[in-house]
Amino acid sequence: MVGGGVEAVVMNYYRHIDHSKVQFDFLVDSDSTLVPRDEIESLGGRVFEIPPYQHVVKYQRELQRLYKQEGWNIVHSHINALSVFPLRAAKKAGVPVRIAHSHSMSGKGEFAKNVVKGFLKLFSTRYPTNLAACTEHAGKWLFGSSRFTVFNNAIDLNVFSFNRSIRDERRTELGAKGDTLVLGNIGRFISQKNQLFLLDVFKAVHAQNPDSILVICGDGKLRPQAEEKACSLGIASAVHFLGQISDVQDIYQALDLFVLPSLYEGLGMVAIEAQASGLPCICSERVPNEVALSSRCSFVPLSTGVEGWSDAILAAHRDVVDRSDPHTSRAFESYDIFKAAPKLEKYYLKLSKTVN
Image 1: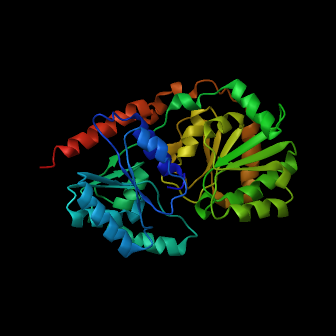
Image 2 (image 1 turned 30 degrees about the horizontal axis):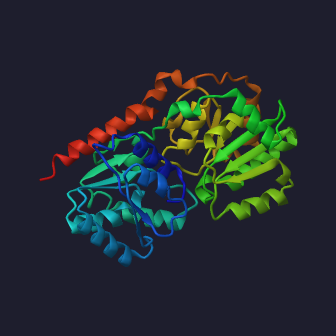
Image 3 (image 1 turned 135 degrees about the vertical axis):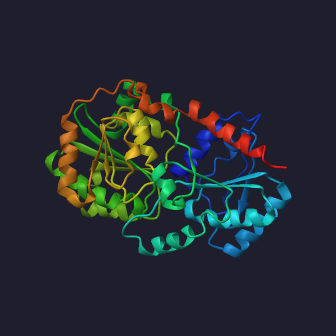
């Protein structure tokens, strides 16, 4: 667990299921950096550390040992194409219900990763007994024509409701005045999230509107490179790298516009959260259309380059946005965790009845 969107989805569901009916234990790589162990254990779950999947032999051996030792009836893997490995071990250990869950896809510019993903996809339906995905798009990418169940990346919508006092407080902390344009992006610093391109875009925005700030939340291997680039572009004083934070819902309040220039996404959960807080969003055309729950979400091709993106951002900022209660729209209902969690709970209980 590294504090990414998939982990957030799993924890959202875990917090809201009925623990007297369904309980989670978590198998995490030993090199995980952000494991909410205290919260998991307070809800009755356990955390087991296993060797990183890169050490595939030790990884498989330890998984098989744990599966046999603990006797779990259901193993639900959330690591996309890599689910081949834990589910292969689960099948060999005799686990009766094995769920592969697709949360992502592949994108251009990642040749080596795409070769590996393409190979693993050949085995994506060999070891699981059941298939799941965060969107139709993500499911078809990994499982092709095989049947799968969609579980939306649901959230507690009330947590993200617009709050004027929080907005004013957080903007003051960022040094933003009343008319300051505050852009935001949330995600790990990896090539998929395309933050280096975002910095180029922001430089163009800042040149036209010097009273502007960019806020980026998250950590990752490319963060040092991003910080260096902000300095070399001369915009370091206007870019806030906040790292991995626990109160991301408050950051949305401070923003005027959310930007997601990803090279690919299984969904783009952060855009759902941003819309729930009433923010307009600009996403790349490689983010699935399912993410647009309101007219406030628009898509801009990456091929339009820095100029196309900066123009789109400045145009969106000129539109006055009412941020009050956007998620009263029926489009948000399927992303309400209080409605989605019982669906997952029933899914597990139904599958458990098939176990002899």
